[in-house]
Length: 470
Ligand code: BG6
Image 1: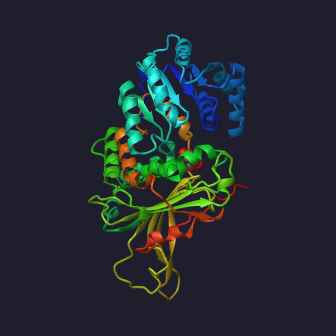
Image 2 (image 1 turned 90 degrees about the vertical axis):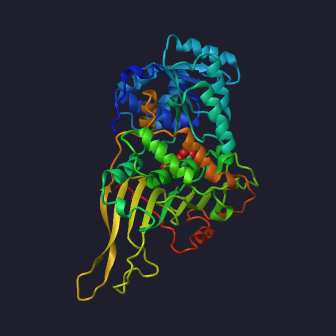
Image 3 (image 1 turned 30 degrees about the horizontal axis):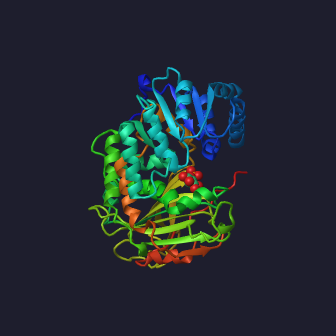
């Protein structure tokens, strides 16, 4: 599966809706700067937003956001990026905004529109792009969350598909642009030793933790509208599950990968309220933009099942939370213990059996844990990790990679409509039900009630924080 961009279909303009917003500030400008440095950004970048700014303010904002995120070590790349910028100010509900955009686009033939705006505005902008003729030959990148539930995701898909063909819609999930996550697909299907044990006969459970040692970081109002489940589980964590659980793609091509991932999500058993534990860190209600009686979860843990031939009976434990004890994303695929206990020390009740550990973030690593004997007369040993990959720095940030891919029309690392639909279908039964939200201390591993999800045995694996670089 090689990614080769066809130059004849490259976007000739990038339009960023929400260019004065938080996402543009934190992620998009640094990604554009990286693209400028790598020589892959050579088209006009038209920012759109309701703020009454001028081009000078936008350029200052761009410079500032890049400076905050990386060291500016290539002044000519920065100047190049700033020279590409244009700005259109206007209300998204006003058709005149789109007329002004059309004018700014001039004779652009293949613009890529990026919706870095609140999800409530996605449909409005898509419809206006269609009405103004700005969707012809164009592509659209839609930020997450794509919908709020199954019904709204379907509605948004219908709206988008009425204006753009499926292969011009790029539903972004920046986790898919991470090296360590691409490596799951590669590692699983570039090796033959895995396949014999990668199933219900040998795998006891799989768990995925995405924890962060910080809170909502000023995004209280946004977070109130989503909560942990919609913010990271329905998308980032489910995408990881799909890559870990999928069957081998039937042919060499990302269409086949998309199909196999969608099948996993379709085989997920719809969640039951007993399979979910929600938590909220102490102090969340005092965050700006948060309701004083909010019961939005900042932590969520769940037990899921994939009703497929390969995974029947294997529990999948997923957990994510803000203000936890570490910042990391890890997968632990735990194997069943040997059938017979031949050594006194092996498979002690509190000890993990062999496992594969994928460290996904903030650094990447891949380790296989197996027991080895200690030197001496006794047949005792311990479990050690054999590192297959350690600290592989990425060449591109996920946003740089995904933005370049979308502008080139390459949908390999984006989510397809059927997968988004199936992911919502799995969590729809537990989305807006009356819920208990347990409080947990900042810096902890979340509410202890989440431990009860392991009623069939086992326990959470807590990722180790990344060591500070000296
Ligand atoms: C985003 C969520 O999609 O992912 C954030 O909105 C979360 O709440 C972030 O912090 C985590 O991504 P990463 O790449 O920092 O692990």
